[in-house]
Each structure stands twice: as structure tokens, then as C-alpha cells.
Length: 559
Image 1 (cartoon, rainbow, N blue to C red):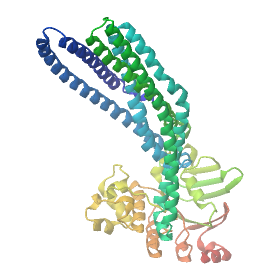
Image 2: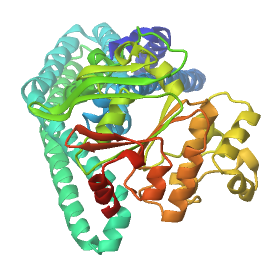
Image 3: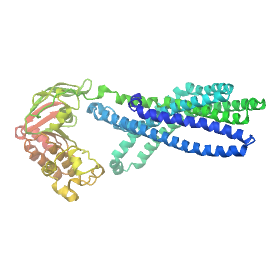
Image 4: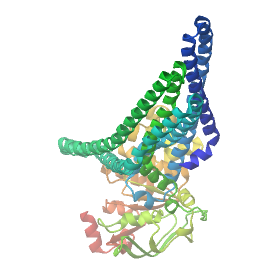
């Protein structure tokens, strides 16, 4: 996290200067108390009190301004550092390739951006400068204590040093407890995400009580880990507090002895005890802060792993393509696991502007094929070429300007129709309306009442499944996509709506369509230029529906 302190060192220095002025205010207050006590015992006490009143009011105003300045400069630094960290994390995650992103549960990324960033805000960006501020305060006040009485200063240093022992012995156990708590939070986030994602399934099967029991067990486990973490920290804090009071008792007895011996005045005693508190209390906070920092190290390590995980970030030195052209697949082989090949030496050429249906049973490799065409996976053998250019050499942003994928589950923002179609990119309204027209969305948008500024609600709940799919299609049309890969996009739609969606895609001139479909009725398959039949990762047959073998047609008719 040092990079953020370095990046915003100007704001950090201003914060530390404010802390220095705060420390000087404490020293002034100590001398104020001393002089007030001495004034009480002086012959002209009443006159002295009047001057002390003026001095006290002045001090009050200065102290208030200093306190505000400290809060202001702290807030400026935290806004800059937290904002930069959040943006850097999001930037890194967004530039993962698909395979790297899917290697972790998405709940982990949510946990990092929510829980971990907040932890770093509290225990790094706030805590470390506050620790430095406490060091400044203790140092300045220790110098002032030397002015009062060197022996008292020595006793203060010795008793204060004892406070730093507990974190040395308990720090590792506290860090381990924090790590266990973080892992529990990750598991809880993943379970909550699964529960809310499958909310309709839970309701339809009437298993609310079972899910509640499972969730309760998870919550209990998380809170048990949190309890153990807090108890471990509490042990260190309790010992440190005991040592603080031990130091205070020793200093008070020593100062009382000096007063009895006549070596110091009552004013010096009060001032010395006051300033000693400003050495001891910051030191006590430092010991607590050191322990807290040790517990947050696992959080820092996880965040840094994302920030510095260069091996997971997409390469940028690639070539751009002018068009997708024809797509050539040569000897394509792919495995998710070693010795479990999903695609076996696949060879095929997709002609520009033609429509292809990909059919086959579960596990036949259909989805794997189109995900490979999208460049989601890099660990394959053989070749994939767009317009003669190897996929491995193509910049992904360039590829996605020409190739789009439509999924069964459409991702929609809680935003306007315009932004959901353009994906927040600049696009003329005329082009957006044309995409809406081509996708068959015109009546839907007009019905919503505010044209392109009509709002799509969370998860597209004010749109039907078919309307959501049309937005996904319009999204690709607005970009001028030449190739559309469709992964059973109509599987959850009723036959009539599915037929309308298929018609939109099949009638789009110039579009290369490669569609996985579970609907294998003759009327639909005859509309495609070619049908590819996959089975266990092999291309068994391909050609127009009419050219397929009678046995194959019979099998397809049964699905």
C-alpha cells in the first residue's frame, strides 16, 4: 500500500503537519495547567487569573482551528487514497481474461471491493498516519516532559516501553485469527450470492426453512471466528492497559515524592502529569495500532495479489483486425482438465455472412467451441483464424468490435435503454434507433414512454425475457457486429417468442450467425445455411438440413 502514500505524499504531509500542531497544542495546555496552578498560589492570583482567561480563550480558538485542519487534511488524503485503490482494483479485475476471472468465485471480488477496501481504509490509510501522528505527539510531549523534570521523563520512557511487549507475543496469533475470519466472510458472501441468485428456485421448491438453517449455520460460524479474533486482540489490549496504569501510578508517586521534598511546585506536578499522559496515551494507541496492523496483513496481501497479478492480466501487444471475415478452425483441441479432452481435432470453416446452427447433446463441446471463438480460453492446441489472422495475435478489444456473444442470461444495468444498448459508448441516436428497429424493440421502447431515456429497472424486471434478449441483440447491432455467437439464448423463452428472436437473427443481412440451439425442429434448422452436429467433442456431420443423414434427422426430431 506504500504506493498510495507515495502518490499522495503532499496531502499526507499536510495531515502530519496538522498532527504536529495538535501536539504543540497539548504541550501548551500542559504549561497552561502549570501556570494556572502556580497562579492560584501566587500573591496576585486574581490578576493572574484574568490574564490566564484571555490566554485560555486564545488557546481555545487555536485548538479548534487545528482540530478542524487535522480532520480536513485527513479527509482529503483518505478520499484520494481510497478512490485510487478502488479504481486500480476495478481496473485490474476488468482486464483479467475470462478464464482467469472465472478461476475465482465472483463473491471473492465483491468481498475484496467491499470488505477488504474498507479494512485497508481503517487499518492502513487511517491507522498508519495516525500511528505516525501518535509518534509525533509522544516525541514532542516527551521533550516538554524533559523540561519539567528529566527523571520523570526517564520513568515515563521505561514504563511506556513495556506497553510494546504484548503485540510482539500476540501479533502472530491475531493475524491468524484475522485470516480465518476473512475466509469465513468469503464463504458467507459466496453462499449469500448463491441464495439470492437461486431465489426463485428456493421459493418454487419450498425449501426456505432448509436454506435458513444452512445460512444460520454459516452466520454462526462467521461470528464464532469473529469472536475468536476479537478475544485474541482483547488479550493484548488488556495487558497493555494494565501496563499503562502501572506507569501512571509510578509517575504519580514519584511526582508526589518530589513535591514533598520541595524539589518541584504543585504547578509543575500537575503540568508534568498532564504532559506525561500525552506521552503514555499515544504510546498506548501505538501498541493497539501495531496489533491491528498485524491482523490486517492478510487483507493487504490479498489486495496486493490482485493489484500486482500481472500473469492474470490480458496482454496488450496484439494486432487489430479490419473485419472478422471467414472463421477458420484447424485441428482444434481443448481440455478443461488434463487427459479429459473436450474437443478433438475440430476442423471447420465458417463462411462470412452465413447462418450456422450448432446442435448436440450435453457435454458435446458446443459451448466450449463458441467460448474458444470468443477468445475466452488461451490454453488450446490447433488454430483459430479470423480473416486469416490467428486469434492468439488479435487484440481482444479489436475482436469484440466485430464479434459478439449472446447468452441465455442477459446482463442489464439499472440505467437507460440508451446506455444498456450502447454500453456507455458514444453512438449516434440514429444508429441506436436503427439497432432497436432491427432487433424488433421499437414498440417496447415507445411503450416505456421516454424513448432512449426510458429506464431499465434492476435485473431488467420491467422487461420480459424476450425483450431482454432483444436488447442484447440491439447491443450487438448498434456496434456493427459482423459475427454473432449465440449460446442457447432462447432456451428459457416460450416457443413463439423464441421463434421471433430467431427470425430477427436469421433475417439480418451480412451477419455471420453461429447459434447453439436446443430447438431442433425441422422448420427452424432448415432456415440455417448449415447445421453442425457435435458429439463428445467431435464434428460428426455438417451441411444443410436436407443433406443430413436420415438417422440424424430422426434423432434431431426426437429432441
